[in-house]
Length: 257
Image (tube, rainbow, N blue to C red; front, side, top):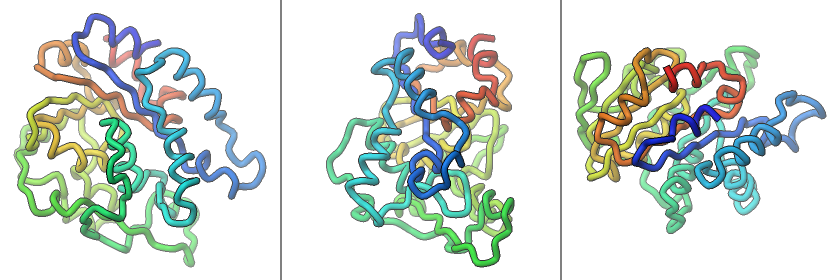
């Protein structure tokens, strides 16, 4: 309902993408009652309120997994975030572009094959398989103007973070209140997000001229004012479903303040 209130009066499309958890998509491999959060109910509620403005990622992931059994990796083994394959499929869904969907057909660069994420840190399983972090090849080759906290960078990748424990921070260096990126396209997009959007960004930069990322955990200005005055063509609200449903990010206060 907060998102609907935020959308009212804006002269641009506002879409919402809620990312299902790995435990929901991989439910058939879990013990009974392992996942206590009712994601079906949360997605049904979101669909009732948002209608066509909700991008049906849950259904898309389940269908994609069914068509490609055993060959897909939508979530890291050792971390709660989605992989770049999942981000790629989600971006194709957002753009309603289903041509050449196969992730294996795009040129990629492996940044590391030594990723042990947040789930590994909690369990500390010595025999756990390490994850691969990969990105589209064009993101490594191209230079982009990136503004974070008043500092300018020429890439969205912070390669030094691959030496840290949390290698997911290779995307944008972590989470900040606001990030502005100049891409190669013509349209401008505002994304209100949590950390799942960080690895979604690489697929935006050939299609959008300006990408602004707002993380409501750190951003204290009025987002609606920014949307109205920032010359954006579209807005995407992108969160993991559990963060969004439990309002860990206090989205309503930030959007309507």
